[in-house]
Length: 480
Length: 70
Image 1 (cartoon, each protein chain N blue to C red):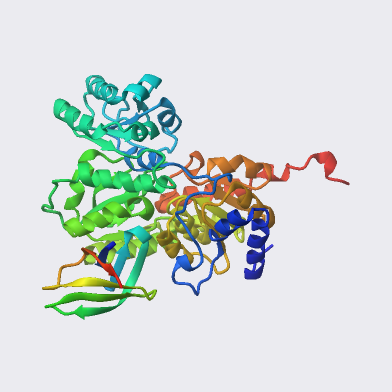
Image 2 (cartoon, each protein chain N blue to C red):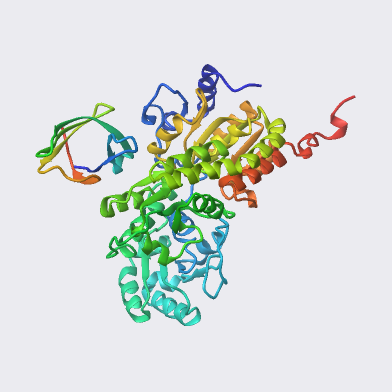
């Protein structure tokens, strides 16, 4: 079956909306659309970054998830205290697979869970004393830490604790930065606001007072790469091979010193626009550092991005970019020769987070696959603006799709592969559709860069062409 | 009076970014675009217009400013 036509896609949306009560139907109708290349602006066809409808299944997270889980969590030499009840920290611990180098528990703390473990009495009498004690204890037990961030969970905002005061006092006592982050889960409509709050806290507590100094001619920073399964490493080697000097990684495998060093770079290279455009824009206004969005998924986009990055530097880097592209071409050809025949023409539906619904499209197309539906959990309209031109005409777009809608879309379209999160995974696998968990690469990765493309292609083949999908029907039901 | 950020994109066009609205739009017309006086009525590609108190001399980009709805 080929992709839906425009009329079919519009019909499908109408059909799905049928079951909702009138008010809900109106609300959801604004979040579902069919891609139209004639449109320049996404707000004409889709509404994004609005509160999820009560009563439907949404896959969104909270502000705490956006701050602790995404932006702050991967900074490896700091300790991130989940300030509040124990669950938020425990269930988000190490789930995102932000790889790092170091000795966990000595100089790096990425996979550990630090929490102030709020109890009833802390809610009743306030938790500031406990937080001060926790911070002092951390300093005694893990003296090699470079700083502490306090990631607030919901109760902190509800009872009105003054974590900023505690942070200032403790910071003076232990002589290290203590950064309060007001990322209570109830703020905003999704994790997206958590990213913003985390960016703002970096701006106010880390970059405050840092001035622009001398920079090398090729100094750049990787912004918005969280090193999931080693992504930042496979991106970094390409940039270094072309002659650039990567001085900071935000925030996968990153350190506090790297963050503070960033105002010295020539250019910020921004991978995840959604979660770190705020700080990039801030550095642009304050320090005059230009930023550039790039995409390291799939050889076409990698080559495009490398050339685009190089165009902002001198001939040495431009030659470097061509050299890197030429060097990896045999690898790319080998991957395409092997996997394209097995994956050609397969149709994919995506429902992921910040940048992937548009960034991975190129990688799928390099493998001969086609993206027939895409949506963001927490994207804003500027994300959809960037998505419209990446996707084919008449592709289904769904913002903050509900469990029901997604299931109906899948039932009708029957794609050959779905890329979404763990909450969707098992349901769709039971429907007999190959599935990849595209938030943390289904425990695989890296997917960025040329080396990542090899793994990406292998994983997609392994999933789509897995023999298990032919075994779903019981032998006695197969007929003669 | 929203805070907007005016910057040049990679092709050198003037871009107006309105954070509250997640709007990134090209500026299609700027009333005063000289070295001496810069600002005035901003027209964006989607037809919206804003008023930026003219600044003298021309500021360096990127530039953050409060603009008025017209």
